[in-house]
Image (cartoon, rainbow, N blue to C red; front, side, top):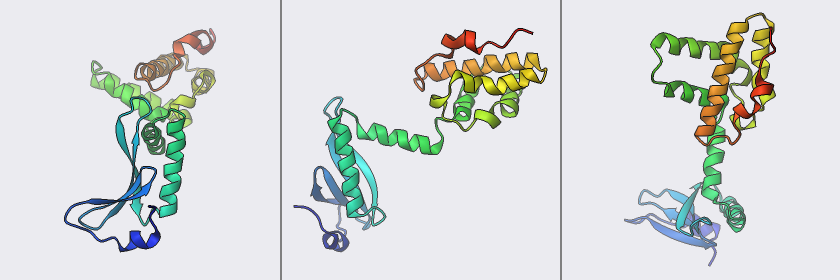
Length: 199
């Protein structure tokens, strides 16, 4: 039997958390403190194991909102997509987890063999020449032309050695992204296009 607004509003806390089912896997969990959380029980399309989705707290997420989220999740499941994986990716995008600068800083931190001076110099050059142009861009959306543009600007200003080092670092960052399954394509495949003009 489906829930209604009155049932939800009048649901009182008990000694232990309990659930009020709405159908289709959707239910409202009431905690001993009286908080009310929307959740959905489902089976992952990949391995058929049972899992849970969290849709938020009532009344911020209304009954209608929760049902809409359930229906969206069921469509994904029907198409063989795990809604929790999609939910995590959306949260990551909102947090800037896939921004070029975020990935670049992870790459920078992963190079444990660098000395303090070299570490500072690398990060300073990226901060000065690269991050202002593509730092906030989702790394998965970047093309070779996007990566090359700020480096070209440095090269055109006559700082050829700096441009070459930036090119090497940007390529290394993109390779790091490939190795960590953040992007699929390897920038080395576009090495000829990525090369600066001979001076």
